Image (cartoon, rainbow, N blue to C red; front, side, top):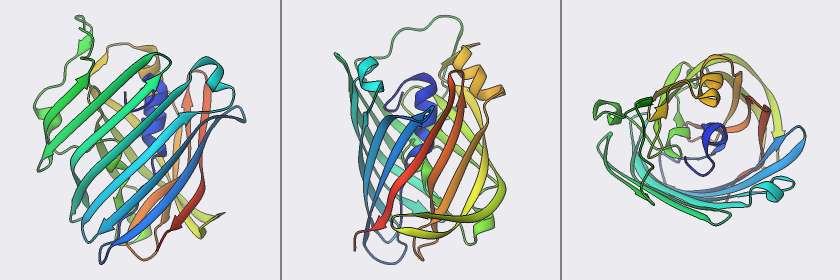
Length: 262
């Protein structure tokens, strides 16, 4: 969960992005994450977020790390701006740039209301065959980008889960269906208290190849769990821990830092 890393890693990356919002006054936050596989660190990310009332602006960076650098030296940046409409994030602009070896890619998505109004991919996306599920105009209504999609506003902890997150990354359109599992304590730098654990079901909608093994695995067999923690008294919850089952094994994403800057 083609944001910064491709295919199954993309779907996993969608789950790890942490954002924060303040509904009353301007506030800034920072989060840092480590992505690991079989106990080995394969990626790191950092996000700085600024919020003023219902408006938000988030920028982050991600890079491969550890043994992953030997096989895939990837670095990328991402930024999203927008505002909330009630409990729902309404992005305005989303831009991601990444370099993987000699390959460079940029994706920009513009939004109008709750719908996608512009998509730019540089270089252009590859041509697809008859086994491709095309993205329709209807698929691009009431959606968010992968970064804004992680913003969860809820009036109480038990309402964090029990929702469907609709995402579009410039090529793939997918849903993440969250269901409540449990509530329990967690402690990391910047936060100590309860977290809400949701199971997540990955549902590809469009913009993918039929019967693609990685997508089919994520859809039908992957076990996904995400832990959310409240961000101060803002009424917003952000992911701080996640596990994502893939064909090659379980990817773990954990927050190393989760703190307010002011």
